[in-house]
Length: 89
Image 1 (cartoon, rainbow, N blue to C red):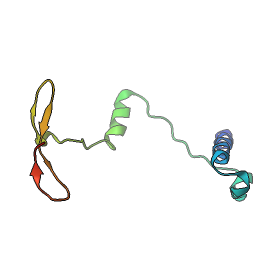
Image 2: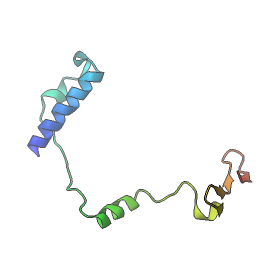
Image 3: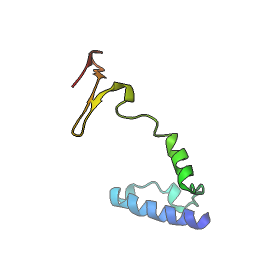
Image 4: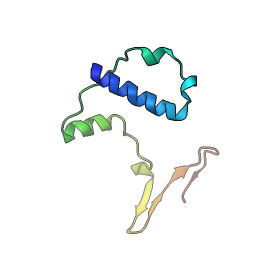
């Protein structure tokens, strides 16, 4: 982990210097050892889907709002959040 911390610190500082002139960077963290926490990667498609499923659980259009589907279009109901009026496009 120490090697990873050195690499991360060097990369972070290089990118920070592109944005902020070096005389404006605070001196404290530059000379100190950094601690990096890295977890093992998720292995296998089923584990990736399980992980993503915890974060990607809502869709843009709920199934119950879809009124029709054909080869060229999808028709759905929605509620205008400003007026609270239901409508169909």
